[in-house]
Image 1 (tube, one colour):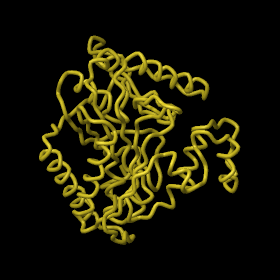
Image 2 (cartoon, rainbow, N blue to C red):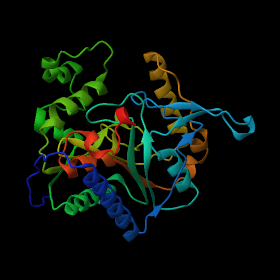
Image 3 (tube, rainbow, N blue to C red):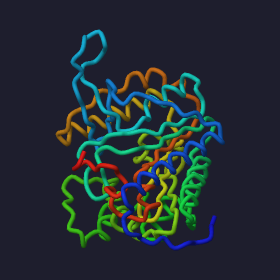
Image 4 (tube, rainbow, N blue to C red):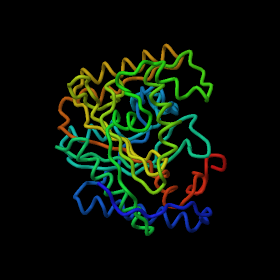
Amino acid sequence: MHNKQVSFVIQPPVSLPQQLQLRARLYALLRAFFAERQVLEVETPILSAAGNTDPNIESFSTLFSGHVDAGARQRWLRTSPEYPLKRLLAAGVGDCYELGRVFRNGEAGGRHNPEFSMLEWYRVGWDHRRLMEETIRLVEAALGMVGRRAEVVIESYRQMFLDELGIDPLHASIDALRAPLAEYAIEASDLGRDDWLDLLITHKLQPAFPRDRITVIHDYPASQCALARIRAGDPPLAERFELYLGPYELANGYHELNNAAEQRLRFERDNAVRRARGLAEIPLDTSLLEVLDAMPDCAGVALGVERLLMCLAGTDAIADVLAFPFSAA
């Protein structure tokens, strides 16, 4: 599918009043977008007794000083609202979304802030392909708010690698995956197949995405399933997509897994990787696991609000779209 292209040009950073107004306008647009589609806005806890086991994401934690009857003393600041939103889905809430702050330890720099805003929503009865289309519509609506449009390119993970790099990511050897990255002198001692695939995206594919293009990649290797379903086949594939606007990854979506036993195995696998890397293990979210089998068939996606604001404002610096960046908070 293709829309008319309009050039995406980097503009001087917006002033503080302008960027605050831009964020407020975007929030109003997002809420109107979901209200029109009868998707319910909800609010879930920021502090949890369980954290995110993903070995590539580090959480902040804090200690509760009140009475022990209140619950677990150690609490984790959420890295996304995913687990409580899924508990709401299992309780029968239906289509829902949350727009709120999330926290990731160690992620600070020109394009990252340890505290940022995330939009996450779920559609009951949908798969990742249908949600992909709605995510495109939302990003197009946000671009329209500032008078822009973008070409849309949708391609499978495998086809993207074949077209752009001439590599079959599902069957190529690790040596073949490493070869295009030789110029970067990457320390390879503890890198596995998925690490090299990720590096090919971040170093070779993603930087070349045109700024006036929405790029959607879908159907990932099964080893990169995270919380997505795996579709049987030869080879099996994770029913997952990522959406980019220009070179920025904006959204990550899944046809959601609702098998508690399988999800527990994935959490435990994550903690095994953490142990091997010398990282602290994270308590499993047993409240989620207890109800996951009751969660209806659905698709969900998380979108980084600051990344979208950066694209709308025409800046490559996340500080330009924050009232106070981490260094000044």
